Length: 253
Ligand code: G
Ligand code: G
Ligand code: NA
Ligand code: MN
Image 1 (cartoon, helix red, strand yellow):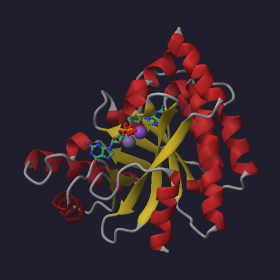
Image 2 (image 1 turned 180 degrees about the vertical axis):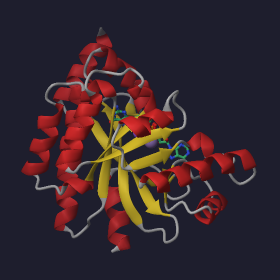
Image 3 (image 1 turned 90 degrees about the horizontal axis):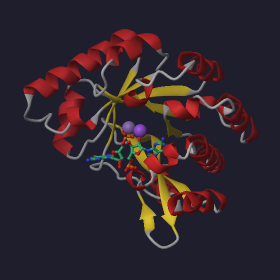
Image 4 (image 1 turned 30 degrees about the horizontal axis):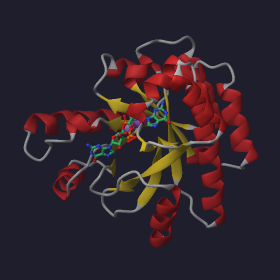
């Protein structure tokens, strides 16, 4: 009960903020965009990562509220960057419970208009595990977002029970290879074979691949050799506050 009250205060006082992890072109190190990852700026406990509070948010049916607050801050950030001449995209995480909210589509549509965001700069990333719950009308909602021009990424690819069927059922533009397939890629030929198969599949389906969890230059090199073009991970950059992300972009331009 105390946590529930704390969550309410957190929403009212804007304590949930996005951190931004860069995605980069493996060959050049150019930043292509950022994944937004929520942090709770807790008044007494400091900056909290999602595992401390995400279940409480879901259990209290505050998922859509979280998505709204993240999406607003992201839209504002995109508008600020546009004024500086930066055209990177930002990708926000959403689970199926957030999509199922009746106001989801209208809210996204309104935000894109209000902040004059070009829709290809606004990406939504959905985890495989959340698709399993088969909330009603997910396909229809994803198709509506596609009609707006929003890009969709399938997160944690390969870890779910039905990875391939999601590619068939839903209109994803990006596949994010889960970090568990990258961790031993320099030494493990089985991991390499799996990643190669995903890359071939993506090419055939006209989808782009982002490798997650790149922690070393050697992993980047192996992935680049295999034809992977984009990645994300601690080697290139950890999630950072908005002002630090802006500094990274300033250096690049
Ligand atoms: O850096 P990290 O600890 O931020 O993220 C942990 C997990 O929390 C990731 O699996 C990510 O998908 C999830 N996550 C991060 N931000 C959000 C968010 O805004 N909404 C939802 N639903 N999940 C998020
Ligand atoms: O589920 P999702 O892929 O959104 O989760 C992203 C999570 O992975 C976040 O917690 C983020 O901080 C973390 N992460 C990002 N890059 C790396 C990395 O290179 N190594 C590890 N171990 N975790 C990473
Ligand atoms: Na994610
Ligand atoms: Mn991810």
